[in-house]
Image (tube, rainbow, N blue to C red; front, side, top):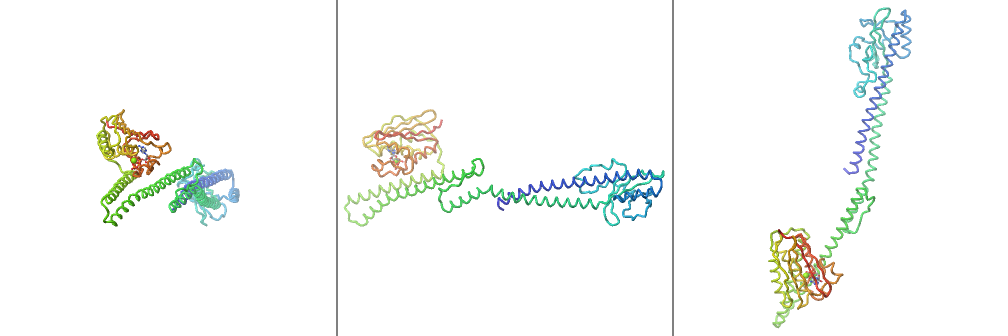
Length: 475
Ligand code: ATP
Ligand code: MG
């Protein structure tokens, strides 16, 4: 069932319940008031007739009083104490009252279903006598009142008066029908109103759904949904949706750039390896020195390929959020190892170890080694032979700071903000050393962040570069 239909149904069900309750209660109060009014009329007519009968001297006079009451719609009967009717006039017995039963019986409510809901306006027990409910010989309902202390010519009698209920019953039934029609109409109207209001309120959701569907089909993440009033919930949802689209767009573009850069970088060494192998295959009788050069070139490119694949794997792990190992690592020892390896890479550069303090950090020893190796490798790569590379590891208030300083070519100010981006290589680096792929610093930053640290780079063209890494230490 659609949300719109559900909202409309809830709306009409709730309003319908309220309308039904209000209608039923007003019906109960209204009808009870009418029946009570009829009782009050019956009671006062009876008192009046009883007074007149008491004052009348003859049966003829009494018959006239009864006849005039009848003309006004009230049937009046006189009964002896034995319950037998006193026949004054030859009146058809439309109603005959069992006075003893009425007097002994409970105070009948005129309309039982209603009595429970609407309390009596004129409680019968405040009056001498008793009310009852009868069916006439023709089946019509009558309301009767029996007054026990009527004295005719000094003899006690019962006086019973009856009023027909047909008219009042019909009017109450009509009122009931009106209430039912109103309740049904109220429900139907609130359903329609709920349907329209819900449709209007949910329109932004429909637009959102449509946009999401379009994007899913076309993969064009540049689309945005319209945002209305910034204070309503659906507009906030639209804003969040747009933010999500913006970040998806960015991620999608970055991923596409990454894939094309990666395939481009992978193609170069593969091409060189293939070309060299082709050469070796075609010219089997190649002179030994040329042959060695072709093999060495292919080997170098395959090493580069292996490094590139390892870097790509590291970045893929970074993107997938693969957690790193966590163990106590003596960072000073790791740095010593890295420096030992780096010394094998170069003979021309001068290494200056300014300080190495013993310090323990928590993390992955292999990754920490890689973190230190990347900037040292850069320092060697982008510093001309005979240049100087200074390394220091110092402990400062819960943090270890490693700085790698070189006197190399430096980085231009416009390149500096981008050097941590994947595949980014500043122009001088490209011309100097085609071997790099531009992934090193990106990986270094990921490792530093994973260890709760930071990596910064300051540089000026021609003056050298300083990389500083800060990591939390284990106390
Ligand atoms: P690789 O992924 O093989 O390390 P790379 O060295 O080109 O390739 P990064 O280490 O990420 O990639 O460095 C990015 C760029 O930053 C380099 O291409 C270079 O232009 C510049 N750069 C980094 N370190 C230095 C440095 N010490 N001196 C001068 N330029 C540097
Ligand atoms: Mg590098």
